Length: 303
Image (spheres, helix red, strand yellow):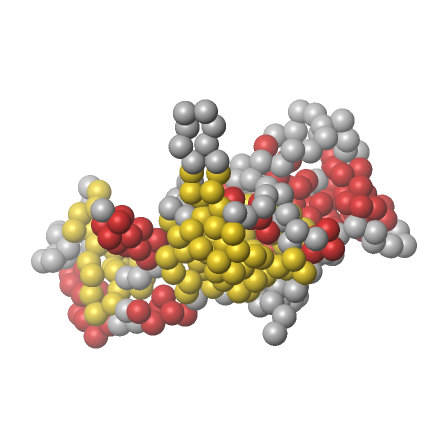
């Protein structure tokens, strides 16, 4: 079977300098990602996310193990054909314009497009950069540079997108626009591997997610598996009114209750009778709760 990404027993140790100990960044990482799948890669800072991404794009050699993209070893230049990549902090030539950046990408990937200007402008418009298409990047904000890099990655018609913190530096409106574009890319059959600290967005668009901590891949799961963990448990939040037995006050005037599905109608009635205003009802298990529970369990086991 051909996988879009196949990682087998990847280890990475950074050798120490004079009087400095070596650092183990990855400890036997193995995972496989199908073509057309969206995979979210999450973990605390320093967990090893960027190290694995650098190995996948051929920028870093593993100490042991192997990795391939569509059956091509990542050490081979051919593996990067049709690969769109955006690092967390894109380093773009600031004397160029967004249009020139995208045009350079088309030429480097050998894409033959009849109207290159029209093709590039389409993607610049998608990322709200059309008005500055011919302006020098010098002086652009971090968010504008991030959107330029994302437009460049998608303009090459990638079969695989690898994005390291693609939402970094974006305001809430820009983040929503980018998530919508990535979701559209996924729906059209593209393969997406991305790391992110924005767990809500990972939960929204990822088919599966992997949680890495201290160089070890602790779990790989899907949102459906998350929901199935405690399908009958919910967290109810309400504002104002009197405290109900068993509730917790998370901040002045805002209360939460953990309840089973069968108890929800009665609890909602109690909230109304005490003068409270129901704010929301959500499943008790989320990607955020799994994130902290898994990391906490790993830290305890490692002591």
